[in-house]
Image 1 (spheres, rainbow, N blue to C red):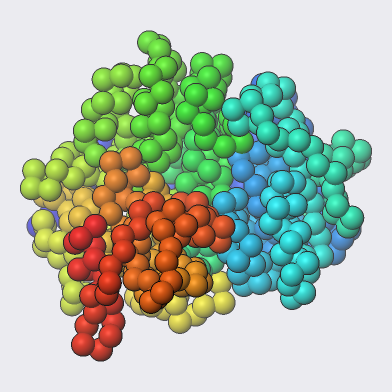
Image 2: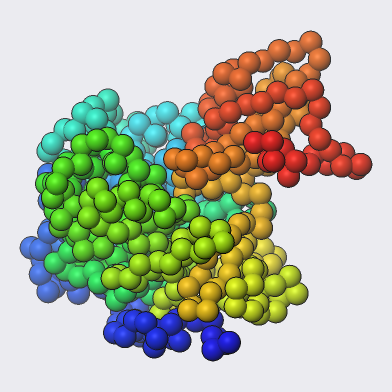
Length: 559
C-alpha cells in the first residue's frame, strides 16, 4: 500500500517538503520556555486583554507573586489547582504559577454547574481554586455550604474587569467587581501589593514526564475522566503550532477557543508561552467583539470551532480587509463542511484549515498543513481532517484490531509525543483506552491512497454539539430528576450550526404533565447550557429491546 506505518513521513516526502517529521523538544517545560523568552525580551508584549497589554516580564512577575502566595499557603509539588474562569489574563497567570511550583493545573469549564463542579473537585482532590468572582458567588460558595466534603484550603477570585481598559459592554457590560468573601484572596489585590521577587521553584526539578494538566473529558464511558497531560505532552504539541503552523514571536495569536478546552489551552496559551506570540484575550467569544479585536490587534493566527466562524459570518459586519493580517486560520473540535469553508473563503479570502485532536492527545494530532487544501471525499462529501503531525503515528484498525486497507473504514488509533500519560486514578480506563500503547479514539474513518485521513462517524453515542462533547447518560440522569419524567433517552440530531444538537425523547408518568419548555428549563438549572436538550419529543412508550434496554438507534433515526 505504500503507507505501512500510517504516519506523517510518507505523506511529507510526497507532498510537503520542509515540514519536519521528527522534532526534539528544545525545552522540558513551558515554564522553562517562557523564562527564556523573558530573558531574551522582557518588555515584549505577551498578552492583550481589551486594550491593556501585559509584557513578558509583567506576566512572569505576576506568576511569581501568585506562586509565592500558594507556597506560603501550603501548596506544594504535585498538588492540584483548579482554574474556573473564562479567557482572562488570570487564567494564564494561574497556569504559570502552578507549574513554577511543580503543581498540576485543572481546567474547569465555566459553564459547569454545582453538580459537575463538585465531581471534578472531589475526583482531582483540588487543593487550590482560582475562580471568576461571579462563578465563585453563584456556584462555588453554595457548593461549599452544601457539601462539607469539599474544603478547598486555598481560594482566590478575580473580576472579569481586572486588567482591561475598553469596557466592552457586550461581554463585560453586566460585570461588577465583587468583594472577595471571607477566607478568599482577591487575586488583583495580591498582584498589586505583592513584592516582585523570584518565585520559589519546585524541588527537585520538574521532569518532562511529570503531570502538568488534568483535562477532564467524558471519554467513551460517560464518567468524566481526567486525562493526565505531562509537561512533555504540552511542549511537544505547542511545538506543533510552532513548526507546522509557523507561530513565532512576531505573531499575534487571537484566542477564539476557550482556554479551559484543550484546543485553547494548547493552541493559544501553551503556544504563546512557547513562541512568545502575543495572546489576545476577550473574556469569552462574542462575534462582534471578536471582529473588533481582529481590527484592533491584527492577528496572524487563530483556531476555533467552526460555529465561531459561522457566527462572525452571520453578523453581516465583516468588512473588506478585516482578515488580511492572518497567515493561518484553523478549525477544530467539530466537523467542518466543505460548503462552510467555501463561504468563509469567499467572504474573507482565507481558507480554513482542519485540525483534529482530542483531550487525550493534548490538542492536535492531525492537521491540514498551511498552504494546502484538504481533499473532499466524493462518496461522503466529508472534508479531510488532515495528516499526522511530526512524530505521530495514526492507524485505521478494523474490528479485529488489524490495520485496515486503504479506503477501508475503521477506528482511528494514535501514538505520539502528544498522547496522554493515562487517566487520573483510573488504571482500568487507561488500559482500555491504550491497550497496546495506541490511543483508541472512538472515531471511525479511513485513509485514502494519498495519505489523507477522513472521519465518517463515531463508535459511541457521544454527541458533538459545536465542539463540546455531550454524553447522553449524564443528561438522562438529570432529566430523570423531574417528577413528571417516566423514561427519557437523549440523542444527537443534525444541526446546521452546531453540527449536532441535543434532543430528548420523553415518556411522562401517568397523571403527570410537563411541557417541552418546562423540561428544558429544568435541565438548564442543573447542567451546562451546551448539554441542555434543545428539543423534547413526547412518546407514549420509548422503543426497547426484549430485555428492556431503550433502543437509542431507533430514536436517533426519528430525530
